[in-house]
Image (tube, rainbow, N blue to C red):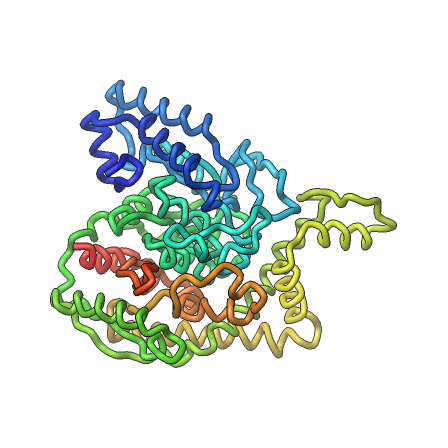
Length: 476
């Protein structure tokens, strides 16, 4: 196995045993980027010089016998909506294509405190709006398993970079499924954390009551180590509660005997690909063979989740993108304007892609006078009913399991002109997001075309450890 295909634990142990250096590992990842990324298009910025410098700093620290983090010296890739001081953070939008932030996001600061080696910034759907990474100013990211198919979205670049061994772990954002779905499509692990578990400060907001900062890894163990490093309260993000952060690595290799697993009938209903359903059920059967208890349950409000999301999310997006006007943020328009209104039309007309414009119009509409009560307010009430659905289910079971996506990775261009079908691809990931719950996408097999299939494990709020425990048992 090559260096850039190892897990976090294997690398950390290799460093301590002086089997290889961080520089050697980083060079292996950078070489993989050079060899593969012209085809995959996972990265929008590669920081060769900065990565090698950070790797050498780590190697010197290790040679002096200083204490280092488990993540120390290990190459990571960050989604391009994370603020990185001195390095472009474009959100893959024309209006921000040259934006260089003056400060780091909180999670970037935490990673730097853990001797981070950042190899680059990854491709994404513009402002995280999309489920395929086809809505990027920098072009489509392709699936490493089949380059004629999408990598998923909106964090497709981060998933594809990891699946292609261009980094050892990566970060994305998950609002309605943007980490779990690409993790499923690319055959890696992707953890959507509880809302507020990881600070959002310094990460460009899409929908503020839905957004989470979430990692990709090669194993449940990787996810545990990453969460140990970045979880917790942050002064700069008031939505991070003072809930104690456990040692997530303690949930690894734990017995799942008598773990109660709920299988919602709505997650195996019409529209779910047969091979996806059968593969997920087989994985659950394996856990049942280890002593877990499986029970069929119902989450009746699931059918309303997509509608709730595509009313409330565009409303919040519309408000959040108001600042990008070519004055405070973003590129100024090419032509001179007659007045301020004309300036706005030109700046945003040139600076925003089609999917962003579509969602801004939807969001502005549902917030407008006469429609707020009929759409936005009603959607928020239904969101509360989705929360109650999960609360009721968790009175009977410890975790809930089902597919991540109704289908495996689809062909590039297949749904790009059919936004409603694209939105429905998130039908199984949105409910957990609506309730602010942690959910882990685990690779559990391939279909007959050799495409990955993901199992989703959902737990109560701040119980990420249960997701890791179940996933770790599956790995064994």
